[in-house]
Image (cartoon, rainbow, N blue to C red; front, side, top):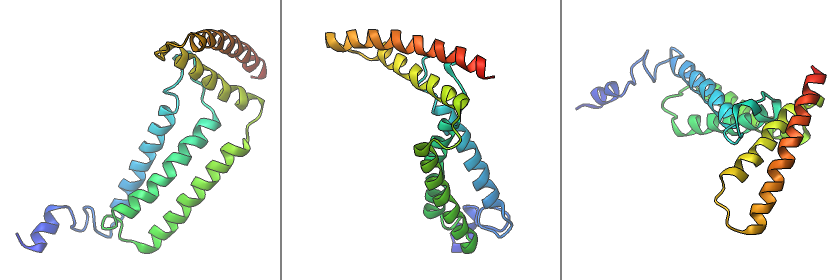
Length: 168
């Protein structure tokens, strides 16, 4: 197989993966958008049940903090797919800013008001309940502690749900 045949066999023709028609970047952004949605939803994998699923900025900030570096990794590990050097540099800068910005937003609790606080804390407390229920604990002190945690966290979730209703 010649080099031309080999390249064509791997989608390097114009209009496929390596051409100048912008399609690789369109596919890049589709991939990134889907990845962000998946990462956001996976952030809730620790909740005890769907009733404790609350959309909130903290989960979004953390999803972006994980997601943005993936853009850097994709561009860096597949340079043949993304041939526009100037665009790539702009994307690297964007993803670095998004990583730093979302990390800062999480740590600073940017835009977290009363309502967002409650919407963030309910899934957090729910995660503690899930861990206590599902962990294979044998230490009697930990088992007793988990009993207290479950009771306290459920009581606090109920209280936060009442507060959330009042804040709506």
